Amino acid sequence: MEKNKVSRTALLMAYCRGYHAVHDDSKIFDDFLAYRLLPEEDRVSFHQEFTLTSQQIKSIDPASAALCYDEAAALAWNMRSLAPLPLAVSRARYSEDSLKKAESIQQYVILGAGLDTFAFRHPEMVEKLQVFEVDHISTQSFKHRRLAEMNWKIPANLHFVPIDFTQESLTAVLMSSSYNPQLPSFFSWMGVTYYLTRDEVLAILLSIANIAPPGSMIIFDYMDTDAFDPERASNRVQAAIEYTRQQGEPMKTGFDPSTFAADLAPLGLRLYENLSPADIEELYFHKTMNGYHAYEHMNFACVIVE
Image (cartoon, one colour):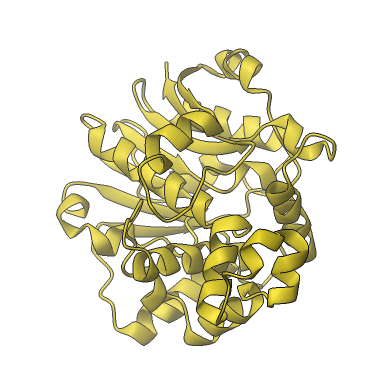
């Protein structure tokens, strides 16, 4: 990510969540505030970017091209077929469902928060939690400006903690805030691991293990190693890897799901749940009527601090 530049992928994820909330009847995750927080010029930009022509669609999926009779239909096809909307809404749903089920949690730490709207959608939960949004200072500054423009009142229990994940220690950054290492905590780390190196991912997980008491939870998504093999990766994920590279936010890292528990054990972490794309499909997509499917090569993990 370029210095002093808001994350384009953070804006895209907000656009995807907002599109789903507005345009889909059967909702996996209802982020009804996402479109309001995203500036209009960015909504228009993504709308234009993801509205393919009939010829473009025909080159990818000839059978669907005839059904894309106008801009709205063409955009809907792309959101189902190529855009990361299914990933954006399913991982948000998994994270917040897991938080609601967690017991005795007093602190909620959102790593790589982007334009997350949890603190504004769930005031009843924020009253009982200290919420920490941890992200790059450029993205946080952008969000602060938007909150001010919208005249949204920032809850007293919401704390913004700037960080450069590649240069700064998560331990040092959190300990310089009002985060309390003695309180049971829930960490949501969605949409970040694959932009870091393997060593950076493991170092951050170790930092969490060192500053969160036993029983604390970490929820995150990760790519499997096949995603980076052109002969094995799905077309949709290959397109995502190319898109993020063009945005200056290249994807770098995947893990082997079959050995992931062994990777985490030396860090003092226990892999409690490890959802494959097939698991995610069954959990969130098999009953929807919108034509969405789980993102290939993407896994959701729930880890417990031992």
